[in-house]
Length: 171
Image (cartoon, rainbow, N blue to C red; front, side):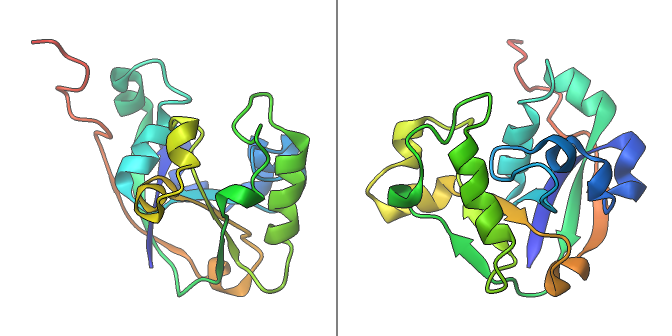
């Protein structure tokens, strides 16, 4: 399986050190603090979209980040359904029940992680009753790096610039 992630250039070689990241230390949307976690994307477009949460412009992203391409053995992923999600799942600061829900799956022996939507997407699209619509939006892959399959994940290569130089350029 191929996965993607935006990586700060300073930490490309340290991507496996999840314990040093804020998602582990403080918790994030789909995990409580101190729950082992790596946030990945099933497609490069989603990785680029997620990066927009942390950068003020494509130029900043292109200066500081690369897109990493990862290979991982087949994963046991729980695809979260809209009816399982708290109506406030996309809120910031993060919803505690959403964090608890995600952590429970991440720590469940049956799963390596979960498939969830991006909070950058319109919530009505993420909650669509049409499977085909949701399939294009549920592209965040949240993994427990302590699981055997996930521990075998390898960084294949990185790409820069992240965004085309034409991005948001009106010329």
